[in-house]
Image (cartoon, rainbow, N blue to C red; front, side, top):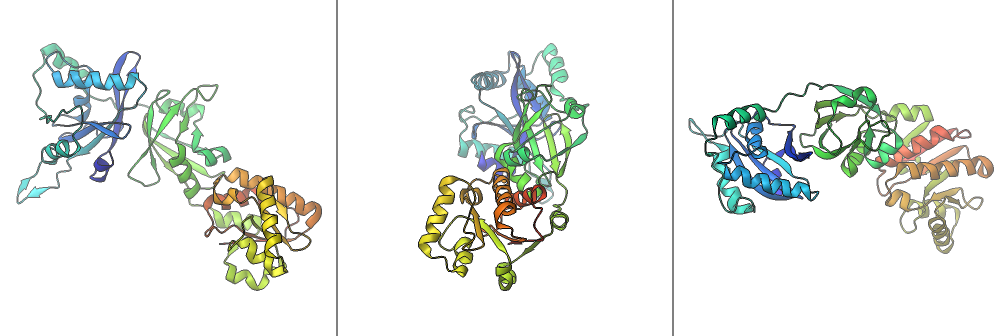
Length: 403
């Protein structure tokens, strides 16, 4: 599959079972002619073909093959067998954009590539044979049915909506669609193309209409969507969704409002070198790791020896809760995994909030220096800091985040 994506194929749709009937959904290229297409299951290319018909009409031939069309009937059977065992069958497509020429002559991209793709990839459903795009003629009744079935209707419910990026969405990579917009999207279990920002290559997710008791869709994007949320937005940001079709959407996040958030919380973002001359004005909160990590850098300024430091870090990590070297040193730490491994802003937020409550009760620091470099500061860490300070920072006069 990756070899096809590398040369310009992109996801066009997928096959599905509508009750007992085989059906397909195309989000892209449905009316494109002179096009290469491929059927892919679990990353393996099962079949490569080309057509001079609109792609939707060619797929309709597989959906309801005429008795005289052996290729259509064979692929119909193969696709159905995979779907019935629970596998997904994607449709990838590569249209001819008409830009390839030799002198004044146009080179047919589909015709030029198909033979070599089949030779190199050897898709099992091709059986070494090229689909030349010419198929036995159907009866008048079959042709009429093909005309009716082959044109993918334009989605009547196309529009857009917005949603607020909740902490659970941000951490897990999904979002719920409200009642007003639910009609814009497809059925439960359908595969959904998600274009993220301006990226021309979508990720694939799933429409889940069973998760919410009122039947509204929950869009499951997994790791790919979670990573985009954490790179492009912050918790509580407003995400806009453009619905391209019932099975294709584009998400857009507003510019990250870090400076606005920092101003609201009194946060300054700086480098260690810039803040170092003032380091002893602050209580430091970092993560429990020895060696060259920030904890050692700050604790040793107060004469904390390596054995004490190692024991302290071990205790914090073993207990899974923040700890402090106060009053021996104005240095505290959260468990290492929350910064190094978990990438969970909600869990890190809760640990920072626990420290802030301890600060209010016993430490009484008014200036806080947060150093979670590992070696850089991940976006989810900034989000966790913002959330924590927004909910539990009544004593703090100054907050500095080291980048």
